[in-house]
Image (tube, rainbow, N blue to C red; front, side, top):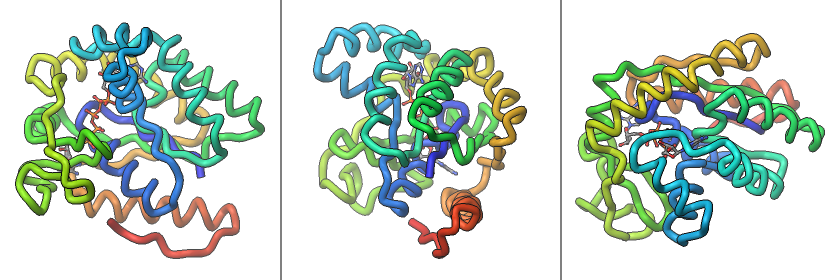
Length: 225
Ligand code: AP5
């Protein structure tokens, strides 16, 4: 299964990608996580990327494409979360998949208005160890401030300030929304109403995966989170 999650910052791409990846036992490839890891390690690409991420700007295509190329070379099934975000990234992804004799099964676009995004991102908590995503109200950890899986102290991302969120949303509208038409034209786009609860959206995504798997001759019911 090869799925892309598209959507503005805070729409729930990472949350839904983690649910599916865990259920299907395939990797979730989040370019945001890969870039933050590279920045933490202080690699030249990571250090350069950090400057862009802190202001909520897109990291140059050349850096992101290299990271994704390496990540997807390890297997033929994956969930891409936050990539592609520009037309150049989308066409490069097509070329890389074609070289591997593969294609995307679906591009799932999660639609959420700006006011909900600010509320979601202001309450987001992330695990530094396993990248699990929580929300103080909508998806709280069992023990306040600690990851359910690793027990690590959860943190708030540096780019989740109101100013950076608004900037990220503007960048999304300008640079990433053209991909909606791109994938519509290819017949792979599925748009979801992202204003519902995490579980309602997961159930709809589960139904989509089950249908796609049926098309591939796989029969099983999709487990929820
Ligand atoms: P990245 O880490 O990808 O950030 P983003 O796209 O801004 O998306 P987010 O991770 O903020 O949100 P999400 O949609 O995953 O929502 P989540 O599930 O966490 O990228 C960070 C930066 O890296 C970019 O700004 C850029 O600089 C750079 N970058 C990354 N990829 C790049 C690329 N391809 N090209 C260039 N640069 C790139 O949910 C958010 C919160 O809401 C959580 O608290 C969650 O619990 C809650 N929540 C989720 N769903 C629901 C729901 N249905 N109801 C209520 N709450 C919900």
